[in-house]
Length: 221
Image 1 (cartoon, rainbow, N blue to C red):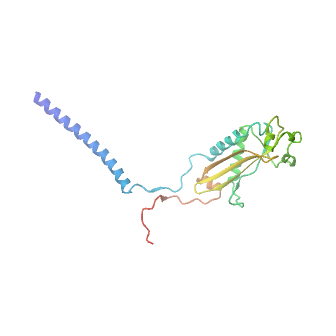
Image 2: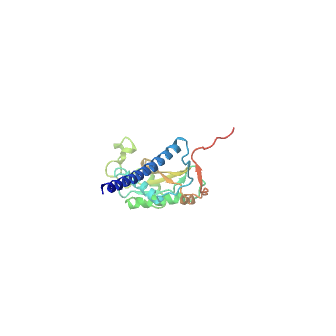
Image 3: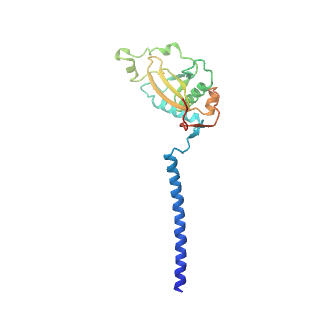
């Protein structure tokens, strides 16, 4: 009886050890394979040539508008101060007639309205480029100091431009007070150059494929 129990116990122990050994060998083989690939540069050297942006551009532009709004304080503009808008332009190409600049401007402007900023259509009036007449300018040493105290509504301009890079569009926006040309808010942000953005920019889409990130062969000179 005891001899049978001993044989069964030995057989169970053998299979348990064999199972653990196989698992250890599999784990070791995987680790060794990864190490071999790393040491001998056999790891994959390709990446997607053009990745789709996972975040809609409206979300990126809304976040940028939030920063612009936060930088505007009551000492710089009153609650009733109008802000005019210019359509964002391509800083590299003045002939760019794509709708990208219009879309960026509209999305930033919409978000500013949601943040209680008063946007105004059309062009500023000539008098909005002048300092308010009811301000005692003799009290101040520089135009920047005109921002203190109870201010009448003073107009400003939202303007911006963009630069098209390889994988991103770099956008810059400024809010400038008209009567003294003081920049009261500014922000820079990037928009991923996805297929949708390329369509807005009238840019041809590159062929999708794989592009090596490192050279894996030598060239004869």
